[in-house]
Image 1: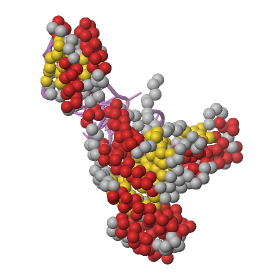
Image 2: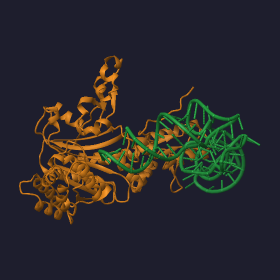
Image 3: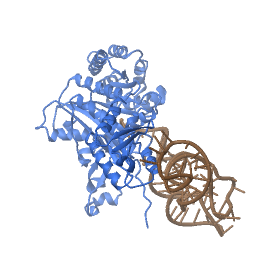
Length: 464
RNA sequence: GUGGUUGUAGCUCAGUUGGUUAGAGCGCUGGAUUGUGGUUCCAGAGGUCGUCGGUUCGAACCCGAUCUUCCACCCCA
């Protein structure tokens, strides 16, 4: 009795075309990571539960996939918690491992464990899947890839500059239309919270502010009131809501609003530097936008924060994000090491490219030569030729059995073969073979013992 | 985690108030065409209607559970 197979919620199979496209995407991202001097690392798919818990806030803890202990896990379970149906209390006694939730925390763990081998600043990139027990939606999966580039051990804002240049380089090569990168700064948010006398409520304040474009100013004010921010503070916030102008103009107004000793001033200076520097470096595809409503809930960011929106008209959340975290490794006992990084959401970028028809067509033509199988002797001669083609870097295969020509041509067509090699009895007797260009429908004849056929293939490949 | 939504052939979808043998287009296989694909024509295969259970003389259709899809919260890539 066969069970009907089913795939787990929020996971996907990838067919050959999809894998080719994902490889292409990853290849572009990897290439630019490397060209900016980042080095690859990989970390295990699961970590100690204690490494992950508490790093992403309460919401994050819930979304971490926990791995049940092996063996008779119940015999070691916390009895009291079990009796009381207390899942949270039970957890640590039945699970000590969990699937990685992102790449940044495992990286921090890596840095601390390998600190003596690393030359600082250390720039690494990492392209691996992560898992979240979220409810799936379009562009939201339970298993998805992140492509991260981070640098630890440098406070310099030039790192932020380079990271933003990577965004620009990658999206430019992918042929994306204009892409908006929102910028904000944790200290700026802290400064504004201080300005309105709500420094204790920074988190609630930030989370509410983040929803501005979704629920509007009134909705935000309502949520802030309900989270304990008082009306007087809200009144002081009015000028922030009314900020206008270019990025630099917004920053200038904010600098005027905040006292000279406010933490906001540092944030404003940083953002101003990024804005001006990148203006001078001529971005091609991304454009920077100061956006105070950008919260990025991750608990560890302390400085500049970024978020990359999907291009206009594409209904998709953010396709990338990042920021600076001053003390991530502090959690693991290594103090005063500043880090900054960005992430590309591979799966979402894939969906955007697909929707905008931006994948190169050439990705689909993987088979360059298909040789027809027209008899045993003939197949042998064809196989020898294919060996020569392969040695020259072409992908080539022989139709596995003798069959009607029509059938073999249909197969070649479906496989997307660019050329068909025809070598039948007649050709063999006359010491020649034919190459048919499937796109053009043209057929050319070559002598079996010359390299003219190969030269022809390579020449056409290079010109097209 | 909360509320809603979806599931019929490989794909996209019809299917009447519950009533005999569940359909179409595309795709697939074979043939028209014994050495030439992408066009055309002919024929054929393929479905226990997501799964399990219930109501009924009778269920693709009604009810429940479960899995899956998508959506809104929440959060995020």
